[in-house]
Length: 279
Image (tube, rainbow, N blue to C red; front, side, top):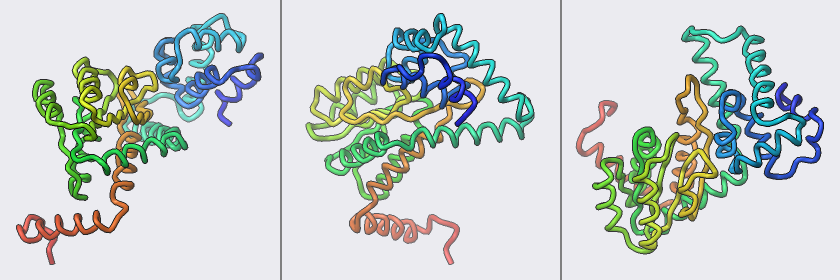
């Protein structure tokens, strides 16, 4: 058990916390760097709760409110950094901390809820005539992995990562029963919110990959997969989200037909002499 988890469990009133408040506590334990500097609203979003739940949880634990709890949490977090050499600007220390952060993110992702969502997304792609992956900015990285590997396995997967006008044109071609995968990282764009709503209205199955349970995209989602993206220096890490995409791909590739599709792609590459690793 971590120092922060022990500290929270020892607070008066911890045993009486309800399910929503427990979700808030889990965010504090799993993402102490984020929580040490976040607002109550940001913690609520990460926990899939509302701001008043965060405030009530703080009061149940014996604090006046979120600022008081955050101050104690930040102190413990910084003490923990000092215990392993303290914050440093060296590339080596940053690299180690980043690897540790990603390992923690992956551990957070390893839940029955996440696995169920991953299987749900894979089944939606498997049963769809066509799948459209939409996103922008940072979301392009996991989108490209899903689009490329899914196509190699023989699925009709198209990426729509450009201007919203182009995304809208491609989405307008979808029919009922087709699939849209919306990937949202860090900040939600107004265009992506509109695209998921339109996809729902057209009868498409909507799958959402995001970092917040409370994302507005969840309102239109048939399948919601939430992955932690906490990184260093106020920038997101995509490691857990890419791992979630790889898990979806693994589910998609578990059949003989998909192996034959991969073989046909390999044959095309070899016929065109595209690779520099031929014997």
